[in-house]
Image (cartoon, rainbow, N blue to C red; front, side, top):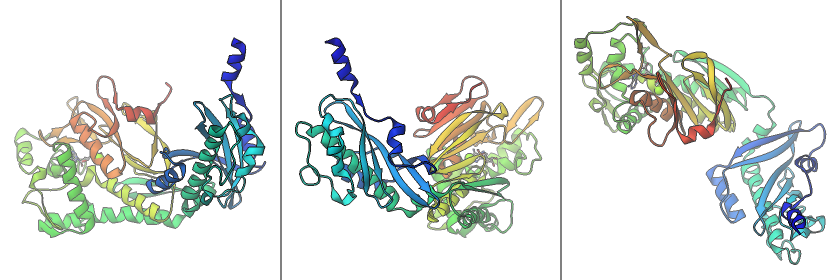
Amino acid sequence: MTVLMLLLALGEEYLTKDEAVRLFFKNGERVVEHAIRLDDAARRLVEKAYGSSVAPDQTVIVGTKEDRVVAYAMIVSEITKTLPMTFIVGVDPAGTVIEVAVMRHEEHIGTDCAKRRFLRQFDGKRPTDRLRMGTSYQPVSGATLSCNAVARGTRKVLAIIQHHFLDRPDHVKALLQEEPIRRQRYIMGSICTITAYGDRAAVEKAFDAIQSVDAALSNYRDDSDLARLHRDRSIQAKPELLAFVSGSLAFSERTEGAFDITTGPLVRLWGFHDGKHRVPSDEEIAAALARVGWRKIRVEKDTVTLPEGVELDPGAIGKGIGVDRAAEALKNAGIARALVDFGSSARAIGEWTLGIRDPFDTDRILGHVTLRDESISTSGGYEKFFEQDGRRYAHILNPQTGRPVEGVASVSVITPTATESDALSTAAFVLQRIPDKVEGLLVPEKGEPVVTDGWKRRFREEKK
Ligand code: AMP
Ligand code: MG
């Protein structure tokens, strides 16, 4: 009796994964498992077809040959009575079911649903067929729940293929590309690398977008809009400058002033602007501090006004803005997978895994973090600093004290956009904690690193 019970509970395996995949793909085809993320619009349509909520992250097996897709397949598990049934649904490039095959059925009843006699009814079905019991297919008597599970899972797969791929030629195009292109440009004093599954022209446009941010915000050139603001003190700002100023003010508000673009005079005083470092006197610091404070900036409609002596420094957010503009340009060109990497800030379109540098030994990495349509920025004391009389002075300044922040080796934060991650990693460095609603890692000079739960989920530590 016990033996029999055990056998029943184990369910039945009909096909291994390899056997299931072999149903749809032939030798010599390029078959890749793609991690996809449904956007909100696609997800809503899939949920409508499926009848309940659907996770945005899905895996689709795609076979390609030369420049066309040969088939899509998804492995799905659906609860029958109380236990799941796992099956594979193969779909042709036009979005029609090739075949549904059951791989595992845990329940000991309803097994007739795993038979070809029943499953054959799904061959050739399209998303518009709706797959309702009694009209689109006849259930096996006594196995209604299992039959229903097959129909439900098949509806989900058809909707995902339709709305994520067939409605989105850019997503299909990305599947066909074997190797991404990788190009670099030197902008804002750093090398920016763009890796993209797409064409070269789109990547060049993305770099141009960063270049136009630099043209607007550079404080190293006389012809930028920022230089004009510093000269004229009150100007009608063009969109880039206006977005920089108002965006920065919002980050100051959110971080209790830890992030503050009016730290310009302090950056200059400590010599971080031109590398002529020195430790200033208390009087000099007090004089510079009198010119610091984000509330001194006035924005009215598109007019920005700075009181005499106030100077803006885009150093903690400019690259993030550039990365976001580049990412927008890539998305507008229909690119579904790309990485814009500006060193201290990066943004992933699709899924990418990046290394996180060890702040105490910058040739090593602490581990890898996986981003999906997210951005990451790192602020590190090791990036720009000087040492005098055995003390180390880092380039991130506390706007309250006018002095370099001490005690933090590096902070990395993950947020949806790179503008946010850039601003908030700098703020976290000053605050010495990860701001609310942000995922991150903070490595103190002494003691144990601090991580958020969301960081842990995305991070894989490097083996020592
Ligand atoms: P990041 O590497 O993004 O953290 O930016 C650091 C740079 O931002 C520095 O090199 C300064 O130019 C500037 N900066 C320093 N302290 C601050 C601060 N508290 N708020 C905003 N910008 C700062
Ligand atoms: Mg920053």
